[in-house]
Length: 451
Image (tube, rainbow, N blue to C red; front, side, top):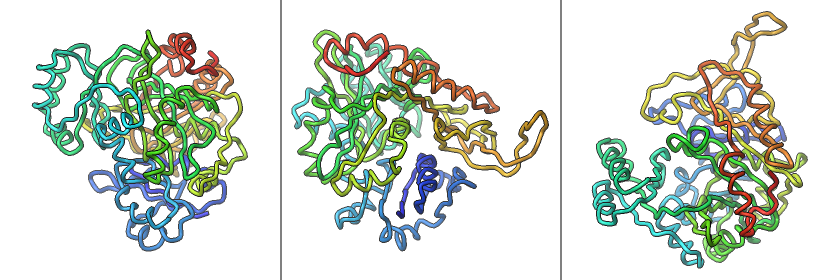
């Protein structure tokens, strides 16, 4: 098959490599950096298209699958092709708005009969500050669109939220992001966070759903700033109370949109009643690193792309490992997550022992021809993987229980050696998940999860 991948930040190197191994022709476009320089991820591993015009002139018409991993680029460009029946996966302009414009997602969930949290959209920090002063209570601030996800902030009270809003308001770049993409202030509740995702096509939902728990903070113990995500625990299930409440009610709207791709809904489950309060949709894109979790859970003999082509055609051919849990651990390099505001020079840092594709999923990495490597006690200069930026790889582990999956993931993490102090959270799959699991099960959620 001919697989066209329109990438925005080297998310798809791992998938492109697996497609190549399966014998498919990969046409991979990786959007250049903001300074116009090409991204080096994938050099020596997967060929890239260097001229975007070639994609439109030649490859879209020839593609068996057109895949977009994010919803901030190429969605509008692909819309006419999707409407003409091209094999487009994830990209759907109307669906993308349900995440990119967070208030639109809230409206869609309310229309589906879900209880939504109080929220209000803003594009100006000053207006938001006045709103918080009037309300006098804490909110969760969440950026929309392509804004820096590190700007997500869970306030303790109205005072510290106003401080953060005032601080961001002093930053010209953040003001620009707010005006362009907007953000919402969402009601803060005391609950247990859980999410569920699934794949949707003309036939409706695939039979398998992916219940998941995200770890978004920088440090072990849910300390530090938000990063987007540092790891995820995932379990595929056929029967899910959370899917019944947070995904299935969206079925009619997704059919109306003609959507094909991944949908995930993150919710808070109230501690006293077990009632769900949806927070945000992930749609018109795959979540990261959950896409790597899902890759690790696919049946070993399943083609990495055929099931996606089948989904477009209304056929559920997705098969996963039975009775398995996946834990993913992001292994970043400093200055992550502050790479947008701090200078960095990371290209060329060796990734030793990072070739195990059973566990390691490469992202911002390439093959360097001349790297000092110890071989049988001697230094040799040979080809080796190196980093190209702050997000070189994600490591996954599998097990029937959460603990087995954790042990598998962290054993693989410890095999990788990277100069310049890589770091990672040590509690993915542990911490609050294990503490909250008994209460979740009492309310009928996460019933197949095994500690």
